[in-house]
Structure formats: C-alpha cells, structure tokens
Picture 1 (tube, rainbow over the protein chains, first blue to last red):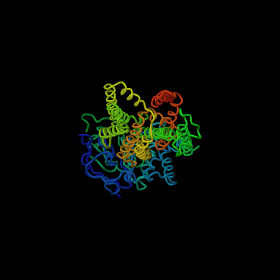
Picture 2: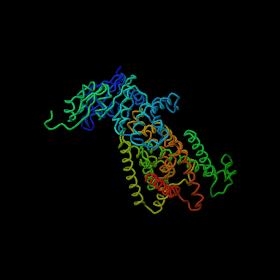
Picture 3: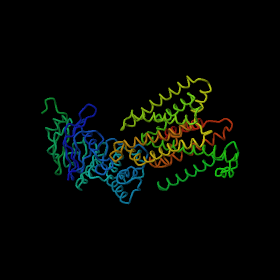
Picture 4: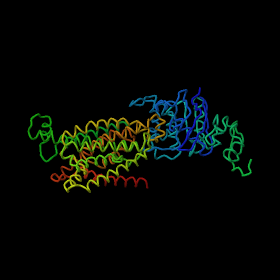
Length: 261
Length: 333
C-alpha cells in the first residue's frame, strides 16, 4: 500500500527553486532515511508533504490528493516531528504528549480511555513516563526531543515524517528512536526521517533516499545508496565502509582531497 | 489535587469573586443606598430616585465593567497564546489606538456633542480600520512577527494622529475632553452603551472562545500545530477579528484601559497549568474581577474627584508587572 506518492514536485522558496521535479513514493512497511547535504531540500520535501509550502506537482497521501485536503483530515494520515523543539508554555510533559490526540477528537470532546492508553503507550515507548508530570520547558534538549517524539507517536497516523529526529540525543536514545521507527515500519506504517548521521541511516533504515540540489540522486537499500562514489560526489567526503551483525557500517573519515576520486 | 479538580476550583472561585465584585459595583456609590434597597430597586418598576439611580446609572456601569474586563482578559489570553508571546496584549494589534483615534476625531469635530452615539460609532470604525490594515499587511497566512510589526505601525500612526488632533484642537475644553476621554472610564455610561457594545463583544467572545484547542496545539509552534490539523488561516482570522470586535467595542464605550489584558493572563497562567485553552475562561473572569474591583476602588478612593479607571489600572498594573518581572528574574538566575 502506498502511503505517500509525490510526483513532479516543484517547490521554490522565494525565487530559488529548492525541489525540481521530484518523484517519491513510500509504501507501508518502509523506514525511509532522507539524506543529503545541507540545503539539498530534505526539510522542504517534508514540509511540502505537510502542506506547509506551496508546490506544483501532486502529492497523494494514502491515495488521496492533498490539494483539496482539510488540515484535520491530513492530520489523521500523517504526523510530523519538527526540527525546532518549540514548547512555548510551561505545561506538563503528559499534556504535551496528549496534544497528539487532538485531531482524533471532535470539537470540545474530552479524551477517551483509548486516547489515554495511546498517550501512555507513546510515553512508554519514548521512555518519558518517569517524568510525565514534570514541566516540559524545564527539560534538557534530549528529553524535550523525546517528549515531542512521543507527541507525534500519540497522533497514531499511518505515516510519520521526522525532521532530524536524532539530533541532540545521546547514543542510546538515538538507537532507541531508530529501533522504534523500524518497529513502526515493521508493524505496517511508514516512516520518513531526514538524517545527517550516515552511520545511523545505514544501520537502521530499510531504504535511503539521497537528495542533492533538489533532486533524488540515489534511492535504494542503504548498501546501494551509500557507496564511496556517491559520498564523494554528493558530500565530498571519504568514508569507512564495513559490516557488523549483518548491517552496513558507514563512518565518514575525511574530506575528499582536491585530487580525490 | 489533580489538574482538573484544581481548575474547577479556580473557576468556581473566580466566578464567586466576579459575582461579589459585580454586586459591590452595584451597591457602592455616592448615592449611599442600602444594599437590600439597591438590589430591590433594580427590579422595581417604580420611577423613584433609587430605582432610577440603580437602573440607569449603576447597572450599566457594573455591566460594562463586567463585559469590558472579560473582553480584555479573554483577548489578552488569546493573543498571548496565538503569538506565543507573554508580552502580547489587546493593544498590540493597534485596535485600541485606532478606536481611540476614532473617538478623539468625533470629539474634535464636534460630532460627539451633536449626536450621543457618534463617539462609540467612530471608535468602532477606527477598530475596523486597524483590523483591515493589520490583516492586509500580514496576509491571510501571516506569521506572528508580521502581525506584531503591523500592529505597532498602526498603533504608532494612530497615536500620532491623536496627538495631531490634540495639537490642533480648537479650544482648551476640547483638548481637555479628549485627554479625559482617553484616560478610560465607566462613569456616566447608560444602557445605550451596553446595548451598543454587547453584540460586538458577544460576537468577539464567540470567535475568541472557539480558539482553545488550536491555541493548545500552537504551543508546539505553528508548523507542528498545522500538522495536527489546525487551520492557521482560520485561527488568525478568529484571533484578529475577535479581538477587533470585542476590544474595539470596549474601547468605544470606555476608552483605553491598559494592563488588564497583559497582567491578568500572566497571573492566572501558572494557576491553570499553563494550558492556553484553560486560560481563556479563567482570564475572562479574572479580567472582569480586576476591572470591577478597579471601578469600585475609584469610587471609594476619591469619591468627589472622578478618578479615571484607566489611570488606576495603570498605576496598580505597572508596578505589579514590574514585580512579576522581578520574580521571573529571581527564578532565572
């Protein structure tokens, strides 16, 4: 089942074209890592899918065209974990996570038992239950990131988009988050996460999409996308390639020399 | 105590306080009518002095205090939540300033003297101008920074035009009348003022009151809120037009009353667990309490001097705000 299908997608920010005729489709069960250098268009792609930017071309969510889709209906199909970890007011952690249930409740309806169970489950999965009563604005950056991730999980959508979700997390929570996204995909959802950490991307994603200059330059299994040639051409770096426990290991080592390649 | 129980208790206490202050506002005044007599006179159909005082002077004054206070508290809470800025207040959109300018122009041109409702109607027209300009400058999907900047520009221009009217005022009496009007007061208002303001305020409250859930979502920033199904265009429309209708009407009948919309949401925010949707009702009641209390206070402090309500709220509000800042500093360092 195709959860996301973008075709001929063009987005400009001001006069500058950021995405040029991009085609991407994501099926249920896939954990897609969106990689590429700064300015490649990763965040722009995610924001266009969410309807936050004007675009030309078409974007289908779950088979429905997003052009005429109401915000509320879109919110039942796709959740978003933003790069900015903004929490404006000093509300408790569980209040933040419970916000994820808002699109599921009409008008002023109170949360149901099922809503509470989903919120509890999201907090458990992101390991934030122990500080559910603390004030969210007083948490450390990494704790805040996990609370906001739990919020997105609580939205309980078929597709989850995450913009640099692992930035600022310690290694154990980075791995836990990547594992969780893998589990979500394995349970029949789709996850698209923009990532800068190629090591995490190589190890945990089921598929990588490499963007450069608004276009997809490679798309496939991590081992196919992350090659010495693509890293040199797109990032300008040399990397160590290995294998451990049946999954690829990629670690950037140094800039490619002027004569490199 | 759980958050829900604490919230219910807070709302109950605020309702009780509002009711108490409303009855105080009805019963305190130079006419010196006994409490029981005055309440009875409210419902009497005799046309004696007591009934007249109660029905024509005290009742509209108390009702306006209630309505204006609720308007300022509610719109302050909405704007702080919408702009995610604890310094936002109803005056920020330029609505109070342009409404004042409308009123000042009606005094300046003599229209206010010729026709009693010219002043509030001109003030409402001023509010409409502000909202149209701010909305046009910020665009249908304007970000909050554009709205703040547009509001500041509109406020400054309206302030300059008000100064010009004072500068060119034909005689000292007109200048004095303008000055006094701008200080903000509920003295000598009639039921006509209540009926004029009520429809605009009710419409404004309905628009602002619908924003609870979207404001909660906006706690996480506008893009995350949009991804949770919040229609940002609709939120902006309701926040701007709701404030214009209610605050425009409040300014039209009472002049500019400062600090209530800024300070009341601040005081109540920690008491409602900082959740924007819960702040709306609490802040409306809190605003009503503050304005009613201040209006009773001006009658008690200086019975013969007609101390202006807006002066008192600023005198009490500004040091209080300073204390809040001081407390925040102690917590931060």
